[in-house]
Length: 243
Image (cartoon, rainbow, N blue to C red; front, side):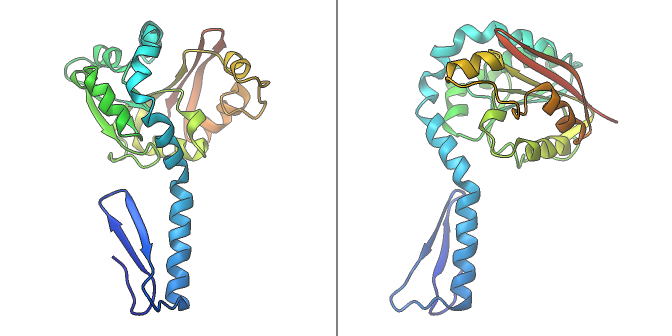
């Protein structure tokens, strides 16, 4: 709790709940104004997480049944990472962990696989489908990964960038955790044109996943884009971290 006599009081419950309490006779003053300003900034920063978690929490239980048929596409995409046995790989925005069996097969029993999703209900659903047998499941923010710098050999991410407010900034965090030569593979089981048509809109020329936009964004964070495919039935981009 943060408090100053006669001013609003800030409190925190656990790791995810914050609030401000106004007592009878509360006077704002400089302390109260600073507190409310910081609280408003906190709410704004977490608004995207709140929307994302609300959206995906109610889908978590049905996600596997709806998209189980995509497992072969995920397996083929993981194969394009070409990681060495013993590598440490992340599945960011892992959902129900459809990529995790293939990731485990690629890095072998001495490798490390972590499935990460910001919505706690989603990795919980992945565990119910046995994906915890292929690696560790973690509820965490992909913009603030609880991992040491230069500790990851590969990042697999399927459909995540579309849900991030500032994906170019996210690339910086992924660069922090990436070891020299780390592979980043961005995947979606449908192409950009398919997804645009599904939502009744034209292709956006400013879409980060357009090759002309993605290449410089990755180069700005020390990666070389060496594969880019945007076809019916698949989007795939593979990039490698510099030394």
